[in-house]
Amino acid sequence: QVQLVESGGGSVQAGGSLRLSCVASGRVQNIAAGWFRQASGKEREFVAAISWGSSAKIYGDSVKGRFTISRDNAKNTVYLQMNSLKPEDTAVYYCGVGKHSAAVVAGTIDYWGQGTQVTVSS
Image (cartoon, helix red, strand yellow):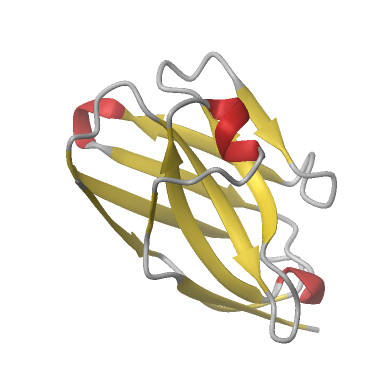
């Protein structure tokens, strides 16, 4: 069993930055992690994924070059640094974990966090 708690969301103007954190507890060894987002009225969208050892980092096309995923396994924490934010980045951001990064990218998530709201104004 794994519990995930996201934080760091908020409101920011376009062009600004935010850093999301996802703290995991429970059996968190050797698992991949990722971020997804869901805007109002839309389906959940893949944002980024990272392998256990951080050797693999994968990004969705809409965030490449602007967002950076990282993790600190000593702190059981996964981060999402979001720069050059746009109004279309407005969504609830969810952290999820899975067996490997390819599974996370495919949306095969074993555990989800509760989500954190990000709002970008123009």
